[in-house]
Image 1 (spheres, rainbow, N blue to C red):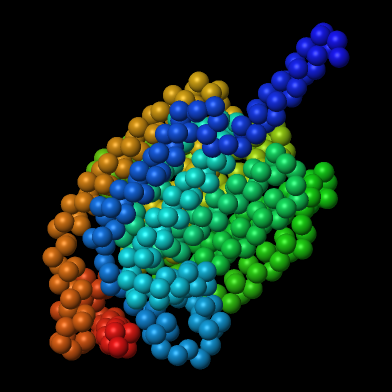
Image 2: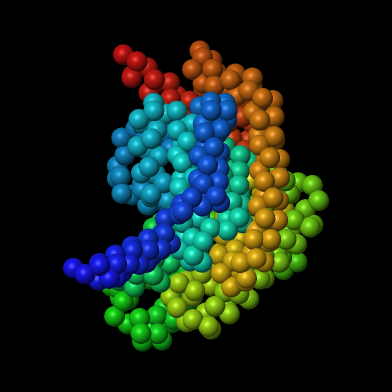
Length: 464
């Protein structure tokens, strides 16, 4: 080969390698030593490590509230396993949660900290998924993406204190995987990605009423779009789409409203509950000066709606419509929760811990829409401000959690020992009811007393 030909061939090979590397870099969480990517991974790993080291050992080893309902079907013989899996618990059918929790509880001799450990691992996984999704969607990791783990993995969240709140976290998990696969389809145009996105919605509908609301809302919005977009006709897995719709219809037809879901409060109370829930991702940080914190998330939500609609009209792509549909569904979820719950209670500080996990969907989808449309320089400024505020929120929640664990340590330890003491289960339930359940009624006392009996028999049998 002549020297000039060899030089040209070498140059072409280098160019192909550069193109290949740049193409794959888009799908790497850390590419070319991205400082923000390194920070994101380090942050998620650090938060997880701190929780498992400093917080998890002080969590309740015994059941709390609804978790007492696990003991009888998991320890005693069941007439029907499938019947138990799909039985409605208050307003929710949670078969995925029941399967995972039974496996964990039996593997750990009913150490209920294992459920909280699962929640933290899942929250870390969600954070990875979302940051990776944002990277593919806009082509880079923004400094504002650091707000995602700071918000999702907050130590004040309900799921970090109570394993049963996996039903809220799982809705967030499958909503995030839906966005991931929708984004992957925009890059690869493979039918499997739409199929996996729809499968995520099916799993989401099996995560309780909240998941059903999100799944149904997204499907109702998505179906007309897919039908009208003839260019997508060959990519749509119509069987999977029909199955998802059928499952949601069956779940809604089988759903029996609980006392909490019957009727609704006046519109003013519903709106007040909705706005308070919208600002709940701050959790403990929202206990003081909530007004400007609501304003920030409200502005982000409005910008998210506007930019997602703009993107849909500009590109008419599956991924941009999916982001829009998820944002609308997240807003609808807040409205539905407010409609059902404001009747029995007005909003009060502390509910952020319970509902904050569901409300996180709004800033997640809003940030995804906003950060793609605006200029990168503007996004970095807004993102820095957002990440800084959620850093303050994370620290406030961390301080509260450490203080709360220290203050309640002796009480929780005494309640733990009482379960296996010689005192009668009924007496133990009466004495420590405030530590075992969030309400104290003859019915809940009976449920706790029965659970204590079962735990004692389980330990006695497995210590032989």
